Length: 102
Image (cartoon, rainbow, N blue to C red; front, side, top):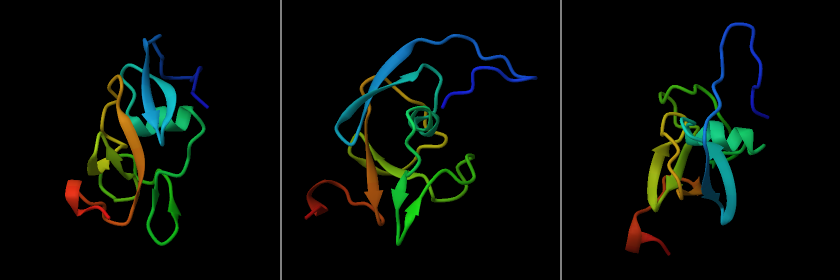
């Protein structure tokens, strides 16, 4: 589900980089945000807070895209750039840090 052609924008080829989502190895492109890489891998649910939530504002203003990234909760994946080897998990609720988890 990646845009390949657009009447106004040009998409330059970019290096593929690996990352992990819910334990599964996926690939994204250098320059992607985490959300755009997930979207390109056909993953639409980014968070679960009372109900499933997907990408909404895509500019970091709402909380629909908060996910756990490399063990850090509440990352706004719509604006966070993808890095090789990132570990991304769906966050339920507000998220917790380290030993607070049960």
